[in-house]
Image 1: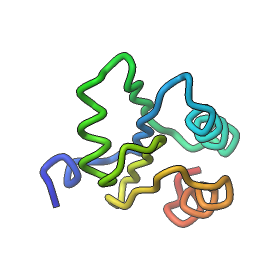
Image 2: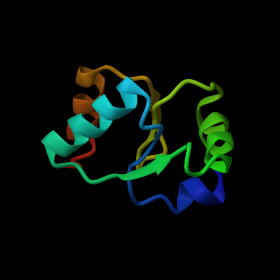
Image 3: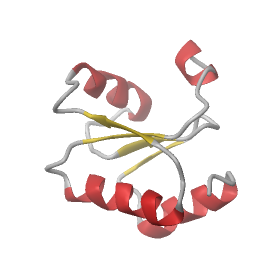
Image 4: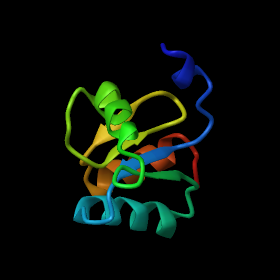
Length: 89
């Protein structure tokens, strides 16, 4: 586990405003009342490397959870299940 993952105490969504799935992920978290930090890969291009290191892919969104697990392009049901599992909302 990396030092970054060990210190993770929040959910981080890596995405871009032009990405429909990224907007959908933010909407799901907002509606569930689950806190997250959004990292805009257009505003912070170096974060794209971080997202790729986490997922091994270039697809977005990449959602990194406090338990160090991650999801790439998850369905609404997958996000809601993880939010509930971790008690984030």
